[in-house]
Image 1 (spheres, each protein chain N blue to C red):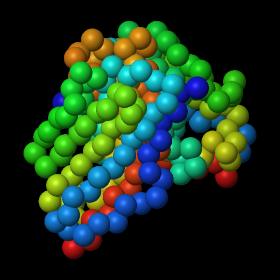
Image 2 (cartoon, rainbow over the protein chains, first blue to last red):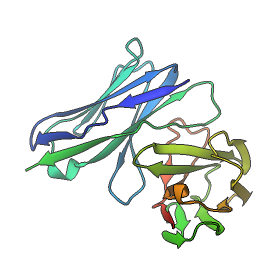
Image 3 (spheres, chains in turn green, brown):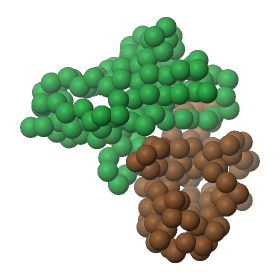
Image 4 (cartoon, one colour):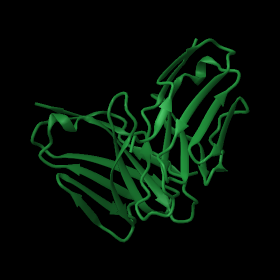
Length: 113
Length: 115
């Protein structure tokens, strides 16, 4: 069955450092992969999408990579700030499905000042 | 746009009672999703609709759960009878199927507590 794995342990880093979050998937051939941010008491919010033919995507301080051989996506936040503290969810989507979007468990990031 | 609107925001009920959660998707969106989130299981897809038609309900836990989408601007998720293990945050999300990015827009969720 399809499986998505994200670091279950919270990631604690110091302000200004780069945070790197991992998303691994199995039994999937996603055409693209999305990353979402979720704050406590709120619904997830879309951040970035990367397609299978893209190795890297950037948006301001965010960078996402997509390695279809390793079946892995990395999500980087450079120059992290306390405001970046949240839970980050990945969601690979296959090209053959009709719209179904399954999420990983999410990794909680805590940026300390 | 007001975004995806869910009601109620919080619901506390007793075991055995019927619970109805409501969702108004973003105008113009043609796909609607119901998710359930718990600490143990994360964000689980329960069911999704495309053009008001249920496409995949394989995530619905059991027959106690049912979902409807009578028109493009309204959907309900009903639990009857409710059980304590149904306690979770229920999210509704909508998107425009066919758009290249097809990102989901989530509501604020309904926090359900079944006592």
